[in-house]
Length: 149
Image 1 (cartoon, rainbow, N blue to C red):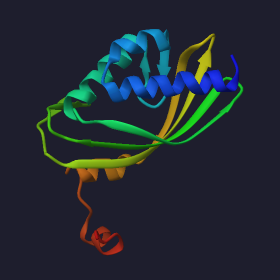
Image 2 (cartoon, rainbow, N blue to C red; image 1 turned 60 degrees about the horizontal axis):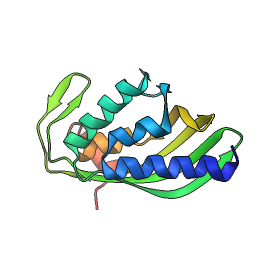
Image 3 (cartoon, helix red, strand yellow; image 1 turned 180 degrees about the vertical axis):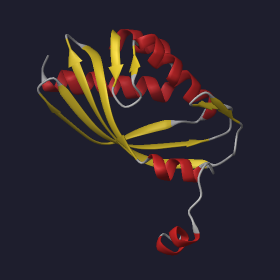
Image 4 (cartoon, rainbow, N blue to C red; image 1 turned 90 degrees about the vertical axis):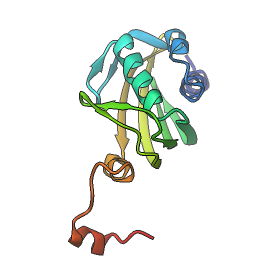
């Protein structure tokens, strides 16, 4: 696969996420897909995770800010947005809707083998995400250091 073909696969993958259509993942991802950060093994488990996330954030959307390919890897810097308007299961606990809007940044490194996505490693700003939906709060010292504006 060329670098441009690999980037096209990842663009199609993000388009599938934005369409909230997890069945499209069958054509793009390997059955033994592994997500390093979530420690999810297998495409079916990943699809279950994505389905739960979409349920909690039905207007969820990813925007590609930057995409770079080298070898069998594609690195994508994304802006993620959504609104927590549905029940969302986090680590076995169902969180009722908060109505809070989220915006956070993610860096994903996707590995592609024989035209299928086989692996993802991610760096995401989970602290800010969890704060925005009201799961954590800054201490008084934190509020002074990081005033909201």
